[in-house]
Length: 290
Image (tube, one colour):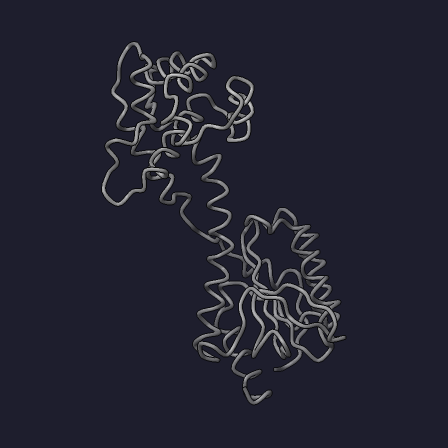
């Protein structure tokens, strides 16, 4: 692999969005339950029980998952996080809201929720002169959906890299999301991909999407620094990152470029540099006889 010296502008020019969807199976189930609520001018305990009931679970959905979708719908009406709802209910009946508790004491659970003004909140939300399901969907998107999107953004970039690795080195000729053995042989560090194995890698690849859960800029710098300090000096370390929001923290990206210029990172890639990444990996495969 040919040595290179990159600049911050080189990387900034190659950045592109990492697009993913915020919805998963749970979000779909929540939206389905919201859409099942009839529009009325007044709601009663029977409506609340229906929202938590698991007697008519759609085919393919587990009762517990269906119940949890109803609980999330209630949280959206109350505009509370999972921890906030759990704390509020613990004060009222000494425990969390689970499917077993509801089946044992549906009236007690509903009474506790009614103390939190759930029926009025449903009434007000449903009868607000806007698309109420859209409003709650946006709350879901901004809360749990935001976390899901972040997780998927990170996994999307990992999958992008792994597809290249499989095409070049073949399945089974690398370790993914593992702890590689460090230079001393007595310690290890996390990495996304170690080639040909985590026990004696000659190539390490880290995939970091900006904004992904666990991949804030400070986390990226810390993770990269730990790998740099742990690996053998003759181990090629490649970094794949993307996300246009890096531009808002270009000084941190500049620190990664400095590591690259010092030879501690062999090269930094983005998704639009896939051809370069593939070419370099094939060259490394040839050089190491992999």
